[in-house]
Image (cartoon, rainbow, N blue to C red):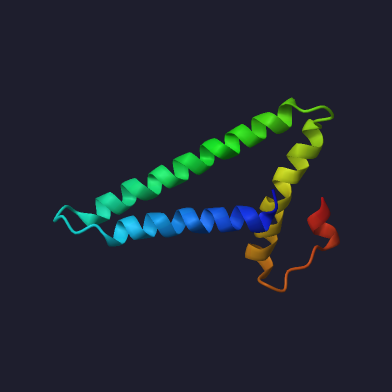
Length: 96
């Protein structure tokens, strides 16, 4: 599945959720209802990610070291952006 297809599917789900939120007019606390709905969406998406991760780990050629490096890459990128701003560059001292 392409990223575009996944984005469209998620956008559709988000639109449906936002439509449900807009129709909340029964006098109950809309903040708690919205929070409950958003938690349900996040929980469902996390469950999907867990299934995808399990499938990847079960596949032939799964490399733990490579998967760990792939997971750490965004962390280091955000750390550099936080430390240096939007013009961040990887310096020699950052590589250690």
